[in-house]
Amino acid sequence: MSWARQVSGRGRPLVLLHGWGMESRVFASWRPLLEAHFTCISYDLPGHGQTPCAPSRLAWSASLEGLRRMLAQEVPKPLLLGWSLGGLLALGIALQHPGLLAGLVLISSSPAFCQRPDWSPAIPAATLEDFAQYLREDPQGTRRRFLALQVLNDPQGRRALEGLSVWPMPDQTCLADGLGLLREVDLRAQLTALPMPVRLVHGRQDRIVPVGAGEYLHERLIGSRLTILERSGHAPFLSRPQACAHALLEAWG
Image (cartoon, rainbow, N blue to C red; front, top):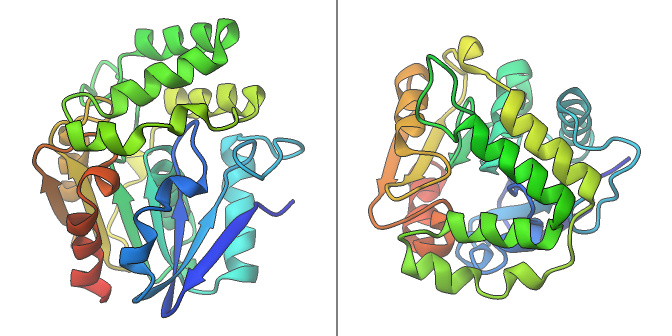
Protein backbone atom coordinates (compact mmCIF):
# COMPACT_ATOMS: atom_id res chain seq x y z
CA MET A 1 0.00 0.00 0.00
CA SER A 2 1.32 3.41 -0.99
CA TRP A 3 1.05 6.37 1.35
CA ALA A 4 -0.84 9.41 0.03
CA ARG A 5 1.49 12.23 -0.91
CA GLN A 6 1.63 15.82 -2.13
CA VAL A 7 4.40 17.01 -4.49
CA SER A 8 5.38 20.60 -5.30
CA GLY A 9 8.44 22.77 -5.92
CA ARG A 10 11.63 22.19 -7.85
CA GLY A 11 15.13 21.05 -7.08
CA ARG A 12 16.49 18.07 -5.18
CA PRO A 13 13.81 15.88 -3.58
CA LEU A 14 12.92 16.56 0.05
CA VAL A 15 10.57 14.05 1.71
CA LEU A 16 8.64 15.37 4.74
CA LEU A 17 7.10 13.13 7.42
CA HIS A 18 4.66 14.64 9.93
CA GLY A 19 4.06 13.83 13.58
CA TRP A 20 1.47 11.94 15.63
CA GLY A 21 -2.17 12.90 15.09
CA MET A 22 -1.38 15.27 12.21
CA GLU A 23 -1.16 14.95 8.43
CA SER A 24 1.06 16.21 5.64
CA ARG A 25 -0.76 19.54 5.27
CA VAL A 26 0.70 20.61 8.63
CA PHE A 27 3.68 21.65 6.48
CA ALA A 28 1.53 23.72 4.07
CA SER A 29 2.42 27.15 5.46
CA TRP A 30 6.14 26.27 5.53
CA ARG A 31 6.43 24.71 2.08
CA PRO A 32 6.58 28.00 0.12
CA LEU A 33 9.92 28.76 1.79
CA LEU A 34 11.28 25.43 0.58
CA GLU A 35 9.76 24.99 -2.87
CA ALA A 36 12.20 27.30 -4.66
CA HIS A 37 15.03 25.01 -3.59
CA PHE A 38 13.50 21.54 -3.17
CA THR A 39 10.90 19.28 -4.71
CA CYS A 40 8.82 18.81 -1.57
CA ILE A 41 7.12 15.42 -1.18
CA SER A 42 4.88 15.23 1.89
CA TYR A 43 3.52 11.81 2.86
CA ASP A 44 0.52 11.07 5.08
CA LEU A 45 1.44 8.36 7.60
CA PRO A 46 -0.82 5.28 7.72
CA GLY A 47 -4.21 6.14 9.14
CA HIS A 48 -3.57 9.88 8.84
CA GLY A 49 -4.85 12.26 6.17
CA GLN A 50 -5.55 10.40 2.93
CA THR A 51 -3.60 7.21 3.76
CA PRO A 52 -5.78 4.38 5.09
CA CYS A 53 -4.76 2.54 8.23
CA ALA A 54 -5.19 -1.03 6.97
CA PRO A 55 -3.39 -3.19 6.10
CA SER A 56 -0.03 -1.76 7.18
CA ARG A 57 -1.19 0.21 10.25
CA LEU A 58 1.50 2.15 12.07
CA ALA A 59 3.66 -0.67 13.36
CA TRP A 60 7.40 -0.08 13.51
CA SER A 61 8.61 -2.79 11.14
CA ALA A 62 5.72 -2.31 8.71
CA SER A 63 6.16 1.46 8.63
CA LEU A 64 9.92 1.26 8.04
CA GLU A 65 9.47 -1.34 5.33
CA GLY A 66 6.74 0.67 3.63
CA LEU A 67 8.85 3.80 3.77
CA ARG A 68 11.94 1.98 2.53
CA ARG A 69 10.05 0.56 -0.41
CA MET A 70 8.52 3.91 -1.38
CA LEU A 71 11.81 5.75 -1.19
CA ALA A 72 13.55 3.11 -3.28
CA GLN A 73 10.83 3.09 -5.93
CA GLU A 74 9.50 6.66 -5.95
CA VAL A 75 12.13 9.07 -4.62
CA PRO A 76 15.71 7.94 -5.24
CA LYS A 77 18.30 9.50 -2.89
CA PRO A 78 16.12 12.18 -1.25
CA LEU A 79 16.75 14.35 1.74
CA LEU A 80 14.49 12.89 4.42
CA LEU A 81 12.92 15.26 6.96
CA GLY A 82 10.97 13.98 9.94
CA TRP A 83 9.14 15.91 12.64
CA SER A 84 8.41 14.30 16.02
CA LEU A 85 7.06 10.77 15.34
CA GLY A 86 8.03 11.31 11.70
CA GLY A 87 11.55 12.01 12.92
CA LEU A 88 11.64 8.66 14.72
CA LEU A 89 10.71 6.94 11.45
CA ALA A 90 13.26 9.00 9.50
CA LEU A 91 16.01 8.16 11.98
CA GLY A 92 15.10 4.46 11.80
CA ILE A 93 15.38 4.49 8.00
CA ALA A 94 18.69 6.36 8.10
CA LEU A 95 20.18 3.87 10.56
CA GLN A 96 18.91 0.75 8.78
CA HIS A 97 19.16 1.88 5.15
CA PRO A 98 21.61 4.79 4.93
CA GLY A 99 22.25 4.17 1.25
CA LEU A 100 18.71 5.32 0.42
CA LEU A 101 19.28 8.89 1.56
CA ALA A 102 21.28 11.96 0.56
CA GLY A 103 20.70 13.65 3.92
CA LEU A 104 18.66 13.61 7.11
CA VAL A 105 16.77 16.40 8.88
CA LEU A 106 15.26 15.77 12.33
CA ILE A 107 12.94 18.40 13.79
CA SER A 108 11.91 18.07 17.44
CA SER A 109 12.97 14.43 17.34
CA SER A 110 14.40 11.89 19.72
CA PRO A 111 15.87 8.39 19.63
CA ALA A 112 13.49 7.47 22.49
CA PHE A 113 10.33 9.46 23.25
CA CYS A 114 9.48 7.72 26.54
CA GLN A 115 11.41 8.19 29.79
CA ARG A 116 13.41 5.23 31.11
CA PRO A 117 15.53 4.76 34.22
CA ASP A 118 18.60 5.85 32.24
CA TRP A 119 16.85 8.37 29.99
CA SER A 120 15.23 11.57 31.25
CA PRO A 121 14.84 14.01 28.27
CA ALA A 122 11.55 12.43 27.23
CA ILE A 123 7.84 12.11 27.98
CA PRO A 124 7.06 10.36 31.30
CA ALA A 125 5.68 6.87 30.74
CA ALA A 126 2.64 7.75 32.85
CA THR A 127 1.81 10.65 30.53
CA LEU A 128 1.84 8.37 27.49
CA GLU A 129 -0.33 5.86 29.34
CA ASP A 130 -2.77 8.64 30.19
CA PHE A 131 -2.89 9.70 26.54
CA ALA A 132 -3.62 6.09 25.53
CA GLN A 133 -6.46 5.92 28.06
CA TYR A 134 -7.88 9.32 27.02
CA LEU A 135 -7.63 8.27 23.36
CA ARG A 136 -9.98 5.36 24.01
CA GLU A 137 -12.46 7.62 25.82
CA ASP A 138 -12.22 10.91 23.89
CA PRO A 139 -10.08 10.79 20.71
CA GLN A 140 -10.78 14.37 19.59
CA GLY A 141 -10.16 15.79 23.05
CA THR A 142 -6.92 13.81 23.32
CA ARG A 143 -5.62 15.32 20.09
CA ARG A 144 -6.57 18.82 21.27
CA ARG A 145 -4.62 18.28 24.51
CA PHE A 146 -1.63 17.01 22.55
CA LEU A 147 -1.73 20.05 20.26
CA ALA A 148 -1.89 22.37 23.25
CA LEU A 149 1.18 20.69 24.73
CA GLN A 150 3.07 21.17 21.46
CA VAL A 151 2.78 24.97 21.62
CA LEU A 152 3.05 25.50 25.37
CA ASN A 153 5.14 28.65 25.98
CA ASP A 154 5.21 29.29 22.22
CA PRO A 155 2.67 32.04 21.34
CA GLN A 156 3.61 32.10 17.64
CA GLY A 157 3.23 28.35 17.38
CA ARG A 158 -0.13 28.55 19.17
CA ARG A 159 -1.46 30.99 16.60
CA ALA A 160 -0.16 28.84 13.75
CA LEU A 161 -1.86 25.72 15.13
CA GLU A 162 -5.27 27.39 15.54
CA GLY A 163 -7.83 25.44 13.57
CA LEU A 164 -5.79 22.27 13.18
CA SER A 165 -7.77 20.51 15.90
CA VAL A 166 -10.85 20.54 13.67
CA TRP A 167 -9.16 18.53 10.92
CA PRO A 168 -10.67 15.06 10.39
CA MET A 169 -9.50 12.64 13.05
CA PRO A 170 -6.90 10.06 12.00
CA ASP A 171 -7.81 6.40 12.33
CA GLN A 172 -8.03 5.57 16.04
CA THR A 173 -6.22 2.25 15.64
CA CYS A 174 -3.27 3.94 13.96
CA LEU A 175 -3.27 6.68 16.60
CA ALA A 176 -3.02 4.01 19.29
CA ASP A 177 -0.26 2.25 17.32
CA GLY A 178 1.61 5.55 17.05
CA LEU A 179 1.47 6.06 20.80
CA GLY A 180 2.83 2.52 21.12
CA LEU A 181 5.81 3.44 18.94
CA LEU A 182 6.47 6.53 21.04
CA ARG A 183 6.34 4.41 24.16
CA GLU A 184 8.37 1.41 22.99
CA VAL A 185 10.95 2.35 20.35
CA ASP A 186 14.45 3.15 21.64
CA LEU A 187 17.16 3.72 19.02
CA ARG A 188 19.90 4.98 21.35
CA ALA A 189 21.98 1.81 21.11
CA GLN A 190 21.90 2.00 17.30
CA LEU A 191 23.17 5.57 16.96
CA THR A 192 26.35 5.79 14.95
CA ALA A 193 28.05 8.02 12.43
CA LEU A 194 25.90 8.30 9.32
CA PRO A 195 27.37 8.61 5.80
CA MET A 196 25.29 11.70 5.02
CA PRO A 197 24.79 15.27 6.27
CA VAL A 198 22.50 15.43 9.33
CA ARG A 199 20.69 18.59 10.45
CA LEU A 200 18.96 18.73 13.83
CA VAL A 201 16.47 21.48 14.70
CA HIS A 202 14.96 21.83 18.17
CA GLY A 203 12.87 24.40 20.02
CA ARG A 204 14.18 25.48 23.40
CA GLN A 205 10.63 25.49 24.84
CA ASP A 206 9.70 22.02 23.57
CA ARG A 207 7.59 20.31 26.26
CA ILE A 208 7.11 17.04 24.38
CA VAL A 209 10.71 16.33 23.37
CA PRO A 210 13.06 18.26 25.69
CA VAL A 211 15.99 19.95 24.02
CA GLY A 212 18.31 17.48 25.78
CA ALA A 213 17.15 14.81 23.32
CA GLY A 214 18.37 16.93 20.40
CA GLU A 215 21.67 17.56 22.16
CA TYR A 216 22.05 13.81 22.76
CA LEU A 217 21.52 13.11 19.06
CA HIS A 218 24.03 15.79 18.15
CA GLU A 219 26.68 14.24 20.40
CA ARG A 220 26.24 10.75 18.95
CA LEU A 221 25.51 11.40 15.28
CA ILE A 222 29.06 12.38 14.43
CA GLY A 223 29.23 15.32 12.05
CA SER A 224 25.66 16.47 12.67
CA ARG A 225 24.76 20.14 13.09
CA LEU A 226 22.26 21.28 15.73
CA THR A 227 20.15 24.45 15.59
CA ILE A 228 18.33 25.36 18.82
CA LEU A 229 15.59 27.95 18.37
CA GLU A 230 14.78 30.11 21.37
CA ARG A 231 11.12 30.78 22.22
CA SER A 232 10.01 27.86 20.06
CA GLY A 233 8.14 24.75 21.16
CA HIS A 234 7.55 21.39 19.53
CA ALA A 235 6.62 22.75 16.08
CA PRO A 236 9.37 25.27 15.26
CA PHE A 237 8.67 25.15 11.53
CA LEU A 238 5.34 26.83 12.39
CA SER A 239 6.59 29.38 14.92
CA ARG A 240 10.01 30.04 13.30
CA PRO A 241 9.57 29.01 9.64
CA GLN A 242 12.36 31.20 8.25
CA ALA A 243 14.90 29.92 10.77
CA CYS A 244 13.95 26.29 10.11
CA ALA A 245 14.23 26.80 6.36
CA HIS A 246 17.62 28.48 6.85
CA ALA A 247 18.88 25.40 8.71
CA LEU A 248 18.16 23.30 5.60
CA LEU A 249 19.48 25.84 3.13
CA GLU A 250 22.76 26.16 5.02
CA ALA A 251 23.49 22.57 4.13
CA TRP A 252 21.66 22.07 0.83
CA GLY A 253 20.55 25.44 -0.53
